[in-house]
Structures are given as structure tokens and as C-alpha cells.
Length: 113
Image (cartoon, rainbow, N blue to C red; front, side):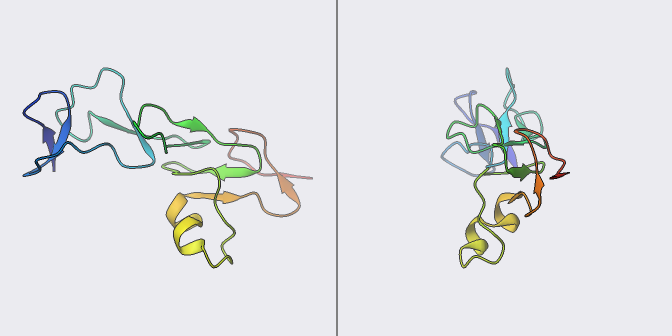
């Protein structure tokens, strides 16, 4: 559970000494009261990803990548890659546009070529 730290500026886990940032795939709400997770961390929308070190923004996905809600990267590896366990769809919530299809930057629908 998250709560407002004693500095009244950051969110902490219950019993935590150090403040905790929103997880990857989220950004901090502008003007958040930082009292709970839900009023502090906003999920990144489809077509964006959240990897900003300060969790200040959700960035627009690059063309050729499909980013679903809560995506953490716009540079996933193919699911048959040996690195898919760390950088594939299951860990990034994004995937490379399938062969024969395309998508424009920040659009989550694939179009036929």
C-alpha cells in the first residue's frame, strides 16, 4: 500500500523508509496530492509508454511499434528472441508491428500494407 511519506511530498510503501516512484508504464498525475497510489500514478494510455526516469510523462510510441496501455518501452524485441523474457510483449506491453502491416506513430491499430 502506498501512502504520503513524512516529507509530505513523495509516495512511500507502507513501512518504507525511501519514497517510491510510480512503476514503469505510469506517470505521476500533475499536481498529485501523493496520498495514495490511485491519486498519484496515472497509467500510460495506448499509443504511449512510460519509461521516464522521473515518471513525469508518458512518451509517444515510435512508428512501427504498437504500445498498449501500461507499455514500458517502444523498443520491444520479437517474441521469438532469446531476450523476449525481459524485453518482449509480456514485459513491455508493446510489440513490433507484424510483418505486412504498419502503424503510424502513436496509433495502436495496425493497417494492411
